Image (tube, rainbow, N blue to C red; front, side):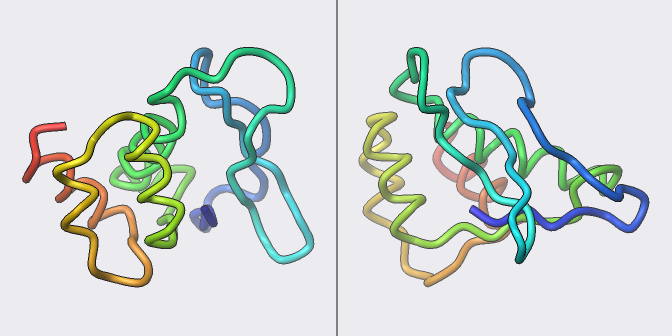
Length: 108
């Protein structure tokens, strides 16, 4: 997942909180979600991390938007056992608004 920072935010790395099993990492071509190599990753950790980033993007304070491929989103939903919503993924890439819409539509 690519994380697009807002104009007010120059850098954002590290954890968004405990219990996700994911953190934000800076690379040459931007900021991305990265699975922690140590510790326990809860089954729904990836989905909750994506959702949290999408919710942060709504405020436009630190995160302006996110880009998640359909395959990554399917994997996150599969791990979280969100099978019905997973079957309705059609787009190649999802942004923050799409993630919020999925949450609302499927009561996730």
